[in-house]
Length: 222
Image (cartoon, rainbow, N blue to C red; front, top):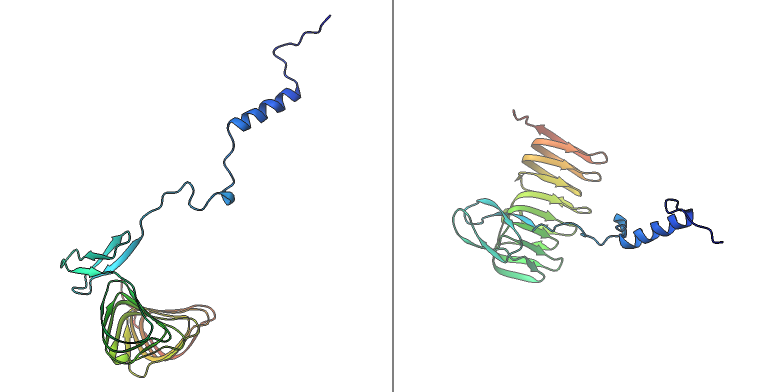
């Protein structure tokens, strides 16, 4: 005589098999650390702050482009990045960046750009940067022929300015000796160092940063 099984009773083995079948039908998503980078996210077009080298108007550009048109004066702006890797003279006008490599020498001519990374030499000419000049170890530049809004002294660089200098914001990861006026903020990072005379609206010295200077901080009312 055969034994009957009640339909409303499920043994443990049947439960395990049912869970396994459900897992196969609806697999769990992989752990976050195993997912491909960017999986499940929407890539946003990059934003770039442009300052027109014709009229000085600032605006944001979304996405990548080789050129654009100023929203104010309608000038066509080249946005190409340039590299100087030899003795050079000529004209560069760009809303992009110019990089002067260690073997690059700007002998004369005109460079107008948003930013510059300087590893080589600026001997003469007219260099005007709408935003930042980043100076690195071993570089040299003529203060009379180089103008920028902001200055960054990179790690390992030691810069001595013989003429009074004026910038907006100055960041020191390396060392700077100068008579400096900054209309914005001077930030001396850990291992950064400033010596000389300093007049600035705001001063920040991180732990590990060095300062040996006559300092005048002008407090600005909000």
